Length: 298
Image (cartoon, rainbow, N blue to C red; front, side, top):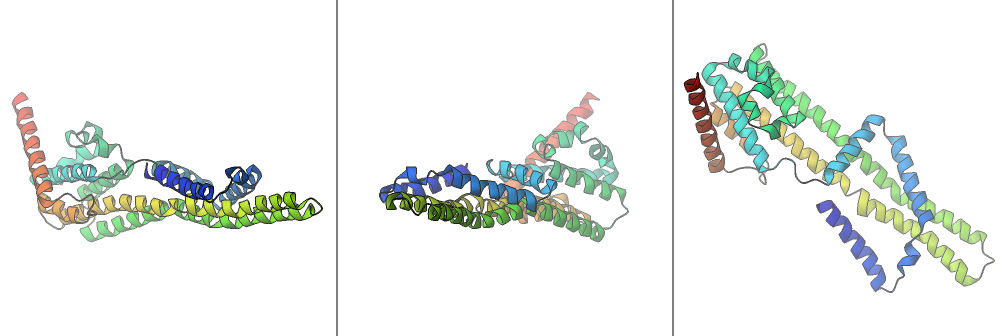
């Protein structure tokens, strides 16, 4: 939504200011200039990226128009899920989680958090490292090194769309100059026309430079830092999981491990100590009630 609002502000202020200063919007409507600049930009984008990068950029740009994906509610769910898994492993042993990990859709713990299970990145990260913990063949330092490698790989993949947009955005002003030069050449080729017509041709040519700069700095380049901010949110939630699991592996109680994870969350999404403590207490109470109910039914 903010992207659309930002674009509307750019359009209103630039073209509104032009009209207020006495300009005629019709003189800025130059389809040929747009064809040259836009076509050259798209062509350069296709040349400079492989199919994987093109697909990743397309998906990333679509997601930019959605709201924040990882808000406080998601982190609260994540903390609750990790607390339940770590609590069960501490009381019954890590092997007690084997069925939950191998069949998450059938697990009472995982099925209680569909929002997390519908996110492949979170789901796979949690399941993969619990499998390694259950296996018991790797110590905490080895698991930490592996987590760091995976998070670094994730960061590199998430950087591809932002880098692609940065590159093509930087090229648009140059393509605007190309369009302007071609317009000037066209105007000079018609130098025998009346001064009014010649002036109109030169004005049309200069629109190319204007459009190239506007497209670059008003529409394309601002998407790159926004993509990096979104990527940072994705990496942060992986770091939160990492710190929580490593804290547990190093011997801390589940509630303390979850608190360690809470400290890694950005302040804008981070629940307070009291919020998390109350939430964990509620989750623990609900889990206890479910266990008693299932035992009674049995």
